[in-house]
Length: 179
View 1 (tube, rainbow, N blue to C red):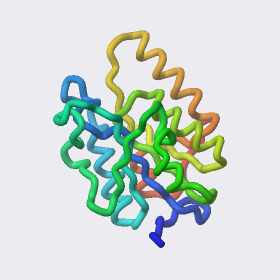
View 2 (cartoon, rainbow, N blue to C red):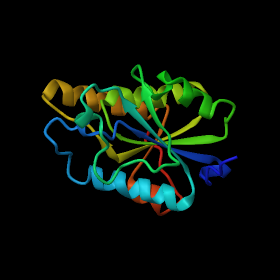
View 3 (tube, rainbow, N blue to C red):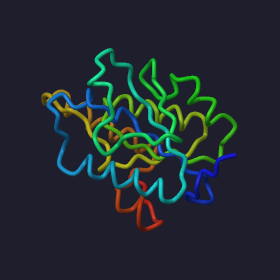
View 4 (cartoon, rainbow, N blue to C red):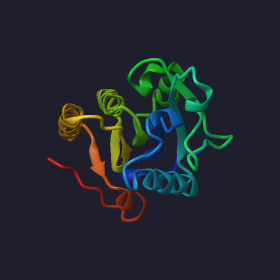
Protein backbone atom coordinates (compact mmCIF):
# COMPACT_ATOMS: atom_id res chain seq x y z
CA UNK A 1 0.00 0.00 0.00
CA UNK A 2 1.27 3.44 -0.88
CA UNK A 3 1.96 6.01 1.80
CA UNK A 4 -0.13 9.05 0.91
CA UNK A 5 1.80 11.48 3.12
CA UNK A 6 0.50 13.49 6.04
CA UNK A 7 -1.97 16.32 5.70
CA UNK A 8 -4.09 18.50 7.95
CA UNK A 9 -5.59 16.72 10.92
CA UNK A 10 -3.78 13.46 10.13
CA UNK A 11 -5.38 13.27 6.68
CA UNK A 12 -3.60 11.65 3.78
CA UNK A 13 -2.84 14.07 0.96
CA UNK A 14 -3.43 13.50 -2.73
CA UNK A 15 -2.12 16.15 -5.11
CA UNK A 16 -4.47 16.44 -8.09
CA UNK A 17 -2.72 18.05 -11.08
CA UNK A 18 -5.50 19.06 -13.47
CA UNK A 19 -4.80 19.63 -17.16
CA UNK A 20 -1.13 20.59 -16.84
CA UNK A 21 -0.84 20.11 -20.60
CA UNK A 22 0.55 22.29 -23.36
CA UNK A 23 -2.87 22.51 -25.02
CA UNK A 24 -4.22 24.25 -21.91
CA UNK A 25 -2.03 27.23 -22.78
CA UNK A 26 -3.62 28.82 -25.87
CA UNK A 27 -0.83 31.36 -26.29
CA UNK A 28 1.89 29.27 -24.65
CA UNK A 29 1.98 31.49 -21.56
CA UNK A 30 0.45 31.40 -18.12
CA UNK A 31 -0.22 34.19 -15.61
CA UNK A 32 2.96 35.36 -13.86
CA UNK A 33 4.12 32.87 -11.31
CA UNK A 34 1.30 30.38 -11.72
CA UNK A 35 3.31 27.61 -13.39
CA UNK A 36 6.23 28.35 -11.07
CA UNK A 37 3.86 27.73 -8.15
CA UNK A 38 2.54 24.54 -9.76
CA UNK A 39 6.14 23.30 -9.98
CA UNK A 40 6.81 24.26 -6.34
CA UNK A 41 3.72 22.44 -5.04
CA UNK A 42 4.49 19.36 -7.16
CA UNK A 43 8.12 19.25 -5.97
CA UNK A 44 6.97 19.61 -2.35
CA UNK A 45 4.40 16.84 -2.69
CA UNK A 46 7.03 14.48 -4.11
CA UNK A 47 9.52 15.30 -1.33
CA UNK A 48 6.86 14.78 1.34
CA UNK A 49 5.67 11.46 -0.09
CA UNK A 50 2.17 12.55 -1.07
CA UNK A 51 0.34 10.54 -3.67
CA UNK A 52 0.28 12.49 -6.96
CA UNK A 53 -2.15 11.98 -9.83
CA UNK A 54 -2.21 13.82 -13.15
CA UNK A 55 -5.64 14.30 -14.70
CA UNK A 56 -5.53 15.27 -18.37
CA UNK A 57 -8.25 16.26 -20.76
CA UNK A 58 -8.44 14.20 -23.91
CA UNK A 59 -6.77 16.01 -26.78
CA UNK A 60 -6.33 14.53 -30.25
CA UNK A 61 -3.35 16.84 -30.95
CA UNK A 62 -0.28 14.97 -29.67
CA UNK A 63 1.69 18.19 -29.09
CA UNK A 64 -1.13 19.81 -27.11
CA UNK A 65 -1.59 16.65 -25.02
CA UNK A 66 2.00 16.69 -23.78
CA UNK A 67 2.69 17.88 -20.23
CA UNK A 68 3.91 21.42 -19.64
CA UNK A 69 7.69 21.55 -19.19
CA UNK A 70 8.72 20.90 -15.60
CA UNK A 71 5.33 19.38 -14.72
CA UNK A 72 5.83 15.97 -16.32
CA UNK A 73 4.52 12.94 -14.38
CA UNK A 74 7.02 10.54 -12.85
CA UNK A 75 6.74 6.84 -13.70
CA UNK A 76 5.00 6.12 -10.37
CA UNK A 77 2.43 8.91 -10.85
CA UNK A 78 -0.72 7.85 -12.69
CA UNK A 79 -1.91 9.86 -15.68
CA UNK A 80 -5.67 9.58 -16.06
CA UNK A 81 -7.88 11.09 -18.75
CA UNK A 82 -11.13 12.74 -17.83
CA UNK A 83 -14.08 12.19 -20.12
CA UNK A 84 -16.20 14.93 -18.55
CA UNK A 85 -15.79 18.17 -16.67
CA UNK A 86 -14.41 16.76 -13.41
CA UNK A 87 -11.54 14.43 -12.47
CA UNK A 88 -14.29 12.19 -11.10
CA UNK A 89 -15.39 11.48 -14.69
CA UNK A 90 -12.50 8.99 -14.77
CA UNK A 91 -13.41 5.65 -13.16
CA UNK A 92 -9.81 4.91 -12.11
CA UNK A 93 -9.71 8.23 -10.22
CA UNK A 94 -12.95 7.35 -8.46
CA UNK A 95 -11.57 3.95 -7.48
CA UNK A 96 -8.29 5.49 -6.29
CA UNK A 97 -10.06 7.46 -3.58
CA UNK A 98 -13.04 5.18 -2.96
CA UNK A 99 -13.30 4.38 0.73
CA UNK A 100 -10.58 6.91 1.63
CA UNK A 101 -12.68 9.46 3.50
CA UNK A 102 -9.58 10.60 5.39
CA UNK A 103 -7.93 11.90 2.21
CA UNK A 104 -7.36 15.60 1.56
CA UNK A 105 -7.36 16.55 -2.12
CA UNK A 106 -4.92 19.36 -2.90
CA UNK A 107 -5.77 20.77 -6.33
CA UNK A 108 -3.49 22.65 -8.73
CA UNK A 109 -3.85 23.03 -12.47
CA UNK A 110 -4.04 24.87 -15.72
CA UNK A 111 -7.61 24.17 -16.51
CA UNK A 112 -10.97 25.61 -17.28
CA UNK A 113 -12.10 27.01 -13.94
CA UNK A 114 -15.32 24.99 -14.08
CA UNK A 115 -13.26 21.78 -14.21
CA UNK A 116 -11.36 22.73 -11.06
CA UNK A 117 -14.49 23.79 -9.21
CA UNK A 118 -16.40 20.73 -10.49
CA UNK A 119 -13.71 18.40 -9.14
CA UNK A 120 -13.67 20.20 -5.78
CA UNK A 121 -17.47 20.19 -5.51
CA UNK A 122 -17.79 16.45 -6.18
CA UNK A 123 -15.00 15.75 -3.68
CA UNK A 124 -16.88 17.81 -1.11
CA UNK A 125 -20.08 15.88 -1.85
CA UNK A 126 -18.07 12.70 -1.23
CA UNK A 127 -17.09 14.06 2.22
CA UNK A 128 -13.46 14.59 1.21
CA UNK A 129 -11.40 17.54 2.42
CA UNK A 130 -10.48 19.87 -0.45
CA UNK A 131 -7.74 22.50 -0.69
CA UNK A 132 -7.47 24.62 -3.83
CA UNK A 133 -4.07 26.29 -4.20
CA UNK A 134 -5.15 29.69 -5.55
CA UNK A 135 -1.83 30.85 -6.94
CA UNK A 136 -1.19 27.45 -8.59
CA UNK A 137 -4.44 27.49 -10.55
CA UNK A 138 -4.07 29.05 -13.98
CA UNK A 139 -6.75 29.78 -16.50
CA UNK A 140 -6.75 31.30 -19.96
CA UNK A 141 -8.83 34.44 -19.63
CA UNK A 142 -10.20 35.69 -22.93
CA UNK A 143 -12.67 38.48 -22.18
CA UNK A 144 -14.42 40.36 -19.37
CA UNK A 145 -17.36 37.93 -19.33
CA UNK A 146 -14.97 35.01 -18.76
CA UNK A 147 -13.13 36.98 -16.05
CA UNK A 148 -16.45 37.66 -14.28
CA UNK A 149 -17.42 33.96 -14.46
CA UNK A 150 -14.05 32.90 -13.03
CA UNK A 151 -14.37 35.39 -10.17
CA UNK A 152 -17.89 34.15 -9.38
CA UNK A 153 -16.80 30.49 -9.44
CA UNK A 154 -13.86 31.32 -7.16
CA UNK A 155 -16.19 32.95 -4.62
CA UNK A 156 -18.53 29.96 -4.76
CA UNK A 157 -15.63 27.56 -4.14
CA UNK A 158 -15.07 28.97 -0.66
CA UNK A 159 -18.25 27.29 0.54
CA UNK A 160 -16.89 23.80 -0.12
CA UNK A 161 -13.09 24.12 -0.30
CA UNK A 162 -10.25 25.62 1.65
CA UNK A 163 -8.40 28.21 -0.39
CA UNK A 164 -4.70 28.41 0.24
CA UNK A 165 -1.57 29.74 -1.41
CA UNK A 166 1.59 27.90 -2.39
CA UNK A 167 3.64 29.24 0.52
CA UNK A 168 1.04 28.00 3.02
CA UNK A 169 0.84 24.55 1.41
CA UNK A 170 4.59 23.99 1.25
CA UNK A 171 5.60 25.89 4.38
CA UNK A 172 3.44 26.75 7.33
CA UNK A 173 0.90 24.11 8.40
CA UNK A 174 -1.76 26.76 8.98
CA UNK A 175 -4.30 27.12 6.15
CA UNK A 176 -6.97 29.78 5.92
CA UNK A 177 -10.62 29.47 5.04
CA UNK A 178 -12.14 32.40 3.20
CA UNK A 179 -15.72 33.07 4.21
